[in-house]
Image 1 (spheres, helix red, strand yellow):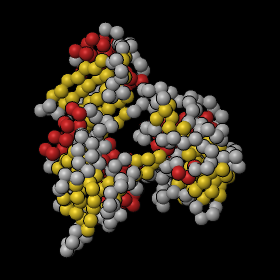
Image 2 (spheres, helix red, strand yellow; image 1 turned 60 degrees about the vertical axis):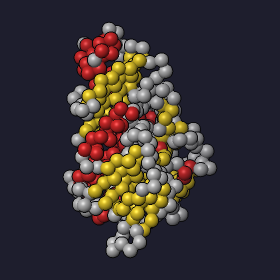
Image 3 (cartoon, one colour; image 1 turned 180 degrees about the vertical axis):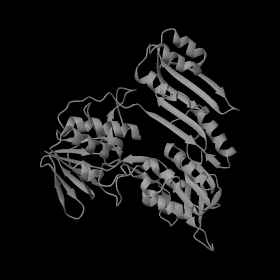
Image 4 (cartoon, one colour; image 1 turned 180 degrees about the horizontal axis):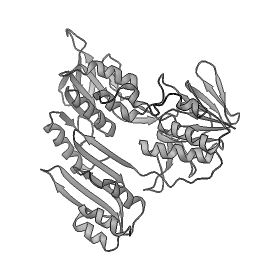
Length: 415
């Protein structure tokens, strides 16, 4: 049996390791398309700040890790898939046969339709090569513009702030973290960042970038739809991501937002599975299908897809939308249906001056979503209450009166 895993991020690496445990005799090929060992994109901000070296981003740090497990790791780019023939077409004219294939190709940054994004000094923060370029341009006191204040943007924001740059964040939506926080939470985060010396422009779009005329060094001017203009040594683009699925055109594999998979993470082709940011799989909260581009989901996908590929039927219960983020010292979290459900109740407590906020969303007696800012203790318990579909009984009234008591409710239902 030849297993091929395309994509060497967390989903792909965990899948390859799980396949080896589940099938000691099978041939396993792991294909990555970057010139580095498999690494975690989530570790790049720590590299930017100098907290780790480049090799600290590597998913597995021991020499010979893949060889010791008889996982053949090779670098290459897949350009096409022939599901019926069981063959991949590789850039440069090569090919790779497979009996079972896992597609774990992740996602790529979205490039918005803005003139000037191809100029020197404009970078995404997605690869190690991006990080190297950003480090070279983001010296202390440099003028830096960050396009986007979503989850990825706010991770980059903290790293840039720690480098001591003069940072301006431009977000097109009306608040920071628009897909993770409501207006109360987003506005609180904005005030926090501004108090830390970061300029935050919400409800604002970049319309054009151009080289600054007569500048003694490579400089950019960033035009805004408000009529303003910002000078910059560096512009970092963090305006969302999209699943890497273009190479599947003509393959017969069903793709919508991502590769559509069933409860065993199998695609529309019997011998092809998908995992991670490129997979559109079962959604715990909605009962539908979603792409949840977060590392915990990628790791779960990789493990479960591998077990199913190896003939060990393992259903996937569905991914839970969740994000936990530290932005210059303010911790924010969102879980599940944080924006509520039709006919549901909610309870919240806001401490605007103390930068603390919690909001719980209910569907009947169950918590189905939660938001939190400024609190770090027991936050994971909210995830447990949601995923366990805990019927709260009389504890619902207690939490409606004081949402901070969620740990007590969890303990009461764990005995």
